[in-house]
View 1 (cartoon, rainbow, N blue to C red):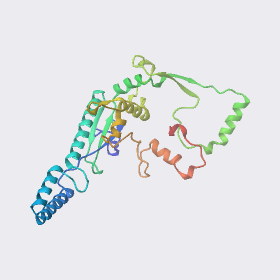
View 2 (cartoon, one colour):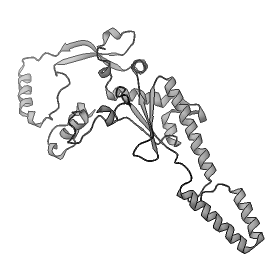
View 3 (cartoon, helix red, strand yellow):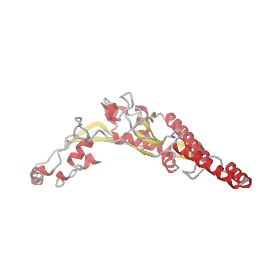
View 4 (cartoon, rainbow, N blue to C red):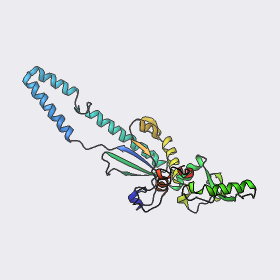
Length: 282
């Protein structure tokens, strides 16, 4: 089920943390090439009717502009060399990503014609290394309880919250409001401070995509010495780069997810009078 939704690699185990899209070169010999050949033959026939002089001029023009694509307006050989250069840049960039420890999977045979997808997964070791480099603060095992004082102000506050309860979105709290986690800068040497029993959920989807994006930004492409995905997007080597949203928002989807919950409790006209689920939006 997860594999069909596209949130995981084909093995259904490794999560897709980021996606890069690129142009897939279509096979030649189609309609445009046939039209180009037909137009060239017509030009030769016209030159023959005009005489030998025009035929020689046409031959010189054809040799000087070999491979001209009439529909596109520029040389087919130049277009092909540009695409080959972009392919070479992508290959070099993807080699660097693999060297950085990321896992890649390509998908070109899709419903979107002419577009290939590069799915990126960050394994546990890469996430830990980058979280340490980025000095990310992660929740530790240590928790403390915020005790409510019995003052008049607190009683008034609790009364107001009960009155306003219908205006709050029906979003389940991740943890009780009175329980707080102490946070600490992540360190592999101090792994005992963190609850690593469930490695899949320790880094949430936002953190995972942020880590992968940092790697994409600083990874160099040896070809043309481009630095980072931003430069490659600007030069057209890749068409787009984005993380994936979780799950489906269709009513038929039985699986609950944060995106569907936001659609029902935030991005809906029927709940315009309610408070916004700020935590979930973030």
